[in-house]
Amino acid sequence: MPQKLLTEREVATLLALSHATGRGGQVHVPAEAVLARFRKDYRGYASEGLDRLVRRPERYVLKHPTSGGMTYEITTAGMKTLRELRLL
Image (cartoon, rainbow, N blue to C red):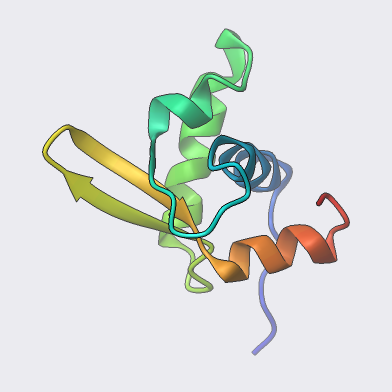
């Protein structure tokens, strides 16, 4: 079964997460670090995009509970997708 295409919102959020982690693997950042890369009026859309990326079966983003709150990590599949889209 072919993969469903990413929406613009999901691509923008995935790219922001990549920048927030410094394009490094296994770096966990809070949602605020990702959302801070968007204008204030777009942060709600970016938050939805982050939630959708976590739920996707391709596992582009992983969620990690910590004592300080929830953190997010971009996976190698997410980085590969950004490279295929020529955004990295």
